[in-house]
Length: 483
Ligand code: LFR
Image 1: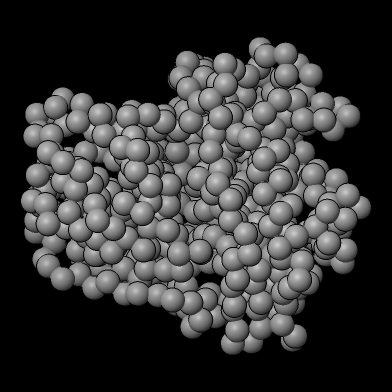
Image 2: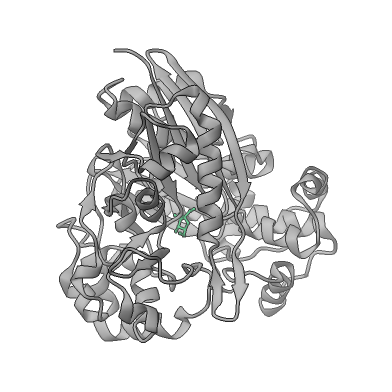
């Protein structure tokens, strides 16, 4: 089959990018044509996304992609957040960021009303106060909600602006808490339980579906006159997992960026009481697979520390060198602690958590980063070990993809802690996953395994083999009560 050229729009919590991919037999070339910052806006009404600014970045990026003549465009973004449209299709206010604290009361109330067990049996999701279902429970009494006719998740909103087509791509719908994890349909019962009219939820769309051509305005603005939008795994994590260069079924993955999403790809969900108690999520991947994983705070801890210190990403290499020289296992935190979610003084909150648990507070930034990265490696280990136990699977290799694949300390320590090799890369796994799903829809290959093999053969990967026994990590894990 002939090669396909497609464009991936990948929107993350700290930046957005447009990447052109050329996919053919033996080729997978990626060219980043545009990257732009994404920062939430603190307004009197709460913490919001500047979604029109994001759309501007998307249009600029697609204009930069136009000379490559992509036949298709696909949009992915972070999960759970949404815009509300009125019945004319107009956006009702800026979407909230999932880090806004307005769900603090609504989330536990909804869980108490429905029952944690009943909720998990139905939606299979890890409890996180920011799941869409809880955001909606908090929004129910607002004027916008009363005027709302349709809810669109962030990537679906961008797709709507590009094409005029309204739908809910299913991998991302699976993060809302309103999708039935077994039936793979919206759960009318859960929607009713939180006061969400079923009509607010658009029809489900599967990755690989042709959505349609660009609207004339979008085509004119971007110069893409002969391009269709294709639905991809629009949840960025689902695209990242699709882009994992796996060559065996016995792999674990860590999609490591702002968040670390660590887990397994399974043929079906695990909604046992044990999985619920261990707070594992069952989100949907491509081809009906289950992403059985846990959200771990991730490099947000590093990003937010740099921000607090008034430093940019360029300061990171020096600080990481200091971290490498700092004393091992001097202080450890639970990277899953909810106190780290909201923007703010993360180093201060780490110090507070350490004092509460009677540990010394690292003196200096390098030692603090060491505490963060060792704690993340321990959280990776605990999560993958538990996932394997709960699913009755073996893990013989861990693929660490996303920006975190550049962090040598984190990759090596994750391998050391687990006692399993870590294959790091691609760093742009999300764009890769977005691109290969479009390429497959264009007929370049028909099975995901073949495309993953192509990713393996063409992208920059680095293998970290465990260099030390797991013993010091066993002791450190025990200090935190982790596996
Ligand atoms: C990663 C991610 C996670 C989701 C979090 C919030 O970018 O999509 O999967 O839990 O962001 O949406």
